[in-house]
Length: 333
Image (cartoon, rainbow, N blue to C red; front, top):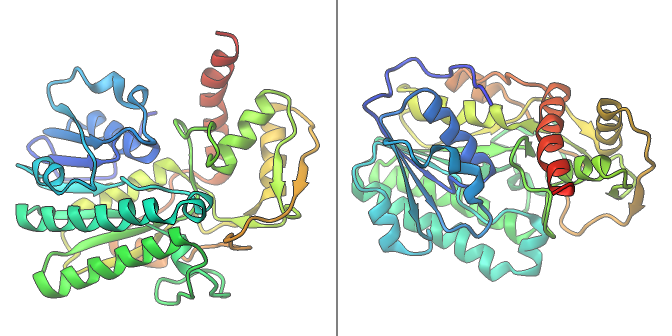
């Protein structure tokens, strides 16, 4: 994937750590840093959800280093931060259903691991750490669009972990003057997002089903809506947040498109792109799911100049092309 340039300063002498760098969003950030010739890129991943295939093209480069390690290991975090200027923290256990089935592991990774990394980054004197927050933090607050200072009660263990991340980051900012930036992602999708496994996200599942001429499952009546956000927009937000010097305290901001798409509309888009008509199978709504989600992206626009570069339909077309090559290839291998 070719990215437009989201930074202005020279990064050829800057050293970056990407946690979860073998994952879907993390590998896309690595790809951007490689494309624009960052001085040094260290990838930290334990491969619990990430894949070596996502980063294999760049591992032979002299400015890319892979460190296999777990953020639950404080020593691994300290080693990963050695000599690093900027951290983009993407390592986490995602998925609301996963957290409902196993809240302890989600807590250990998303809270314990996050705290380990905060401490290590503070002690290493890094210039800035940006971390993956989540729209799940809005919980049961009914207001739309979602505005950063109006949140409700979390509806899942996963949402609790992401809220605690923000609280820890705010405390570190006030106590230690270590200022981090939280990016509340809204349903990020795109190339390299895994369609396999029990906790796969809806877009790769839909595309995978369409390519196999199978009916997808839709939870609820299909009117559930999300602010689906192409991965290049998440990359833009990370790069701008890392390299915007005017950010001088802890901030949390929405990263989305500002456009709601229902599951029924999403399936219709995918069918239209692939020129297929397949009737979905509807089943009960999942526990812990929010019915509607739509972001106000004003704050990100004002603070870092964020503007979504790829809208939903265009992002789906790019994603479908990637899955065509990878899913169909796997079917015929």
